[in-house]
Amino acid sequence: MRAGFTTTILAAAFALPVIAAENFEYNMITGLLPGTEIVAADVVRQPDFRGEKDEKVQAMDQAKTRLDSEYCNSRGGAFVVDNGLVVFDDKTGTWLIGGVCR
Figure 1 (cartoon, rainbow, N blue to C red):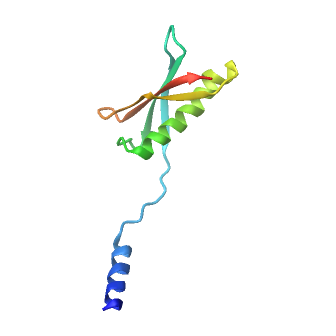
Figure 2 (cartoon, helix red, strand yellow):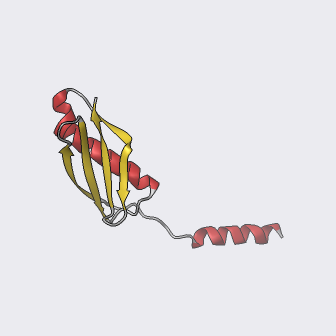
Figure 3 (tube, helix red, strand yellow):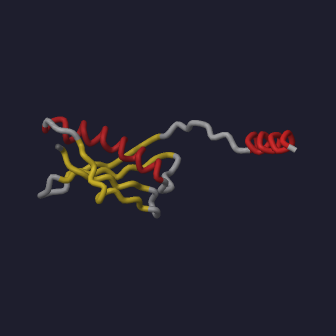
């Protein structure tokens, strides 16, 4: 009985799809909201984002790197995300990542 159960578990494990690491291409539009300290990026990816939690982290990492280099480093700071300014647009597959330089 136990051997049959183990065989069933192993067979099920091998039937699961293998998820290969993908090469992603990111593009974004960045900007500084006039009259404020808010900087933001619209982050798109190929293959397209679907709005999943791990994609949010990917988008925030990509935005931080770009916003640091374009806005924050010259001000002697680093980009700090404001979670209230992180939004996924499911119509365009875009993450909007906003925050400030500190």
